[in-house]
Image (cartoon, rainbow, N blue to C red; front, side):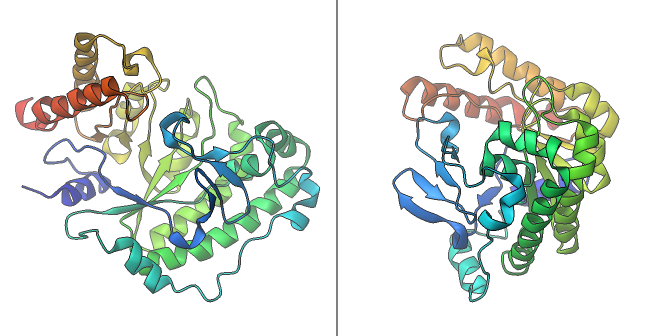
Length: 326
């Protein structure tokens, strides 16, 4: 039987998997750029303060509202300063971060290369979107500055960490529609996603795209610069139609309604199991799908733990060997 790593890499190449995988690649953030200030808070490499307390959805850190580092896009050169990379011992950092990972059986994925969301982190969404409308040339110059720094970091990551995959994590959409038009994406954001992708591809990594919400409008652009996987692929998009169009060229990593009632802890057990079966039976045919279902809620909630154990049992009992039984 193929290892989980071998099975996933087969899918990255557009091939059929031996069995239906679960999300199991290891995510890393380079230890060089985590500046811990207090429990639950940290600054990123550009000085943006994040709140990562456990009561936030999924424990994901978000910029602290009101503590923005940029208030006038035309003055970004005065306020946005990338740190120097001089003196970083990349080899030692990689050794530390990877010391407990068996690379023969487990791959690594780096989430790296935010462009659009960087602007919103710096200014807030409202001001960031207004800046893109009112001062597109300044936004383009800022994106170029961010991207150049990111490329330099990524080249070292590729050299010393040797990740199998690089995922570009830029959320460009709400649950109902994109934040920006296709034209704006093409003019101001895509050129820099493309540069990050080209750097990663030249370093031997596959390209994944993280984009929440109804972002299917951008998929042809992603495919053009080499994306082969998309997460979380929320069902506000036409996932069956996307599978029909792109087949195994674009892996659906997710596709579960993690924000709908089916993921609430109080949802009826039998209904959840029926939806899990529908979920797998819809997205598994012909490959190009990675199982990623869960119940939302606090990790220490006993019912959340019980429901997520049910999902793990369902995966092992029904989903994992789907290609052998169907």
